[in-house]
Length: 324
Image 1 (tube, rainbow, N blue to C red):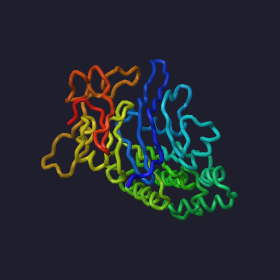
Image 2: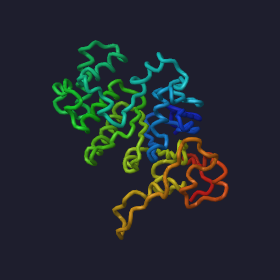
Image 3: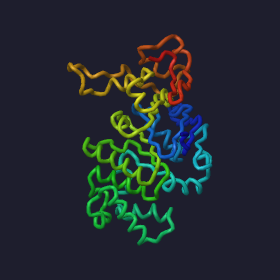
Image 4: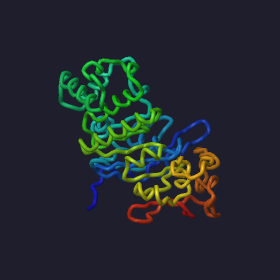
């Protein structure tokens, strides 16, 4: 059965003008998100994961940033070419985002009650009392103990995991169709990570939302996602269903990421693999495969041309001249 598409992104390109030159942060990214689906976007820091989604949300600072091409179709609207009034109507209501660091995302001078009710008063036709009741209900849903009292606390009075739960509660309070979770478990210990992921899945099932999960942690996407998009230097280099990515990766970069994960089934203790070299400087990228300086499968054409992202099968897209 064909799934219904919620978001369709075509040829998204985002640049930043700096003193050193033009940083090509996102280079022709195209993907879809189906309704009630969870997809993962993975890659090293600086590969364009967050900038891609900040572009969709209209949160790229201008200057120095600029979206130079592309479209992002959501609910009949192109998110990249709508006015500020339309953006405000969609952001926080139909599309919500959980940012990396909840301490910097929450205003330290305002109580949690003020910050949570602000979202509801902006997007829902309710009064302050109803907004406060809904906010308490959301805090209870995400597992905050004694929410009737804790809602009047300040952000610094919560632990990192609890602040992240508050951010999730704010994001889902309007029952969004799409939740963008940008590294939602960064800096949390593994026990709290598991609780946050379970929480996201539970909420997704209750309100039937889609999730874009941005992370560098492949363990997180393994348990959460149906499809994985692998990004490198602003390009999508591979996309496939999660099981295929883990059991049969095709791109050398995907293979390197998976080899870098510690395995409990290794018979002998050996040095943990790391991909040689470093990610490229995104200022004035050459017209070549961005991964070729670090690749052990490079051939001559890799140094002269950027591989096109091609549809290999119904679920598999790949950008490589010499895949595994």
